[in-house]
Length: 79
Image (cartoon, rainbow, N blue to C red; front, side, top):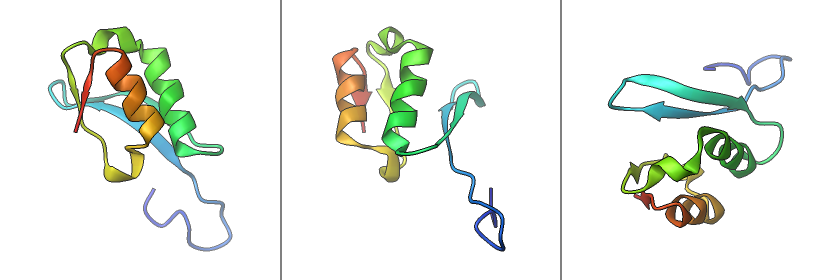
């Protein structure tokens, strides 16, 4: 996405779920409004139930309180 804000083209914003152990993307979503809404939607589609005992690491820009609360509510740990 580097350079997408240059010129007259619209900026493209996406959020992505990445699995470090598998070294690949699990899911992506285009952000039409708020990034936290897009990220919450991705986490719901991926099944938050599977986060029990897992550590979820996020870029500081995506560690919104609602996202962290949703992760912890399903047994995940945020950092």
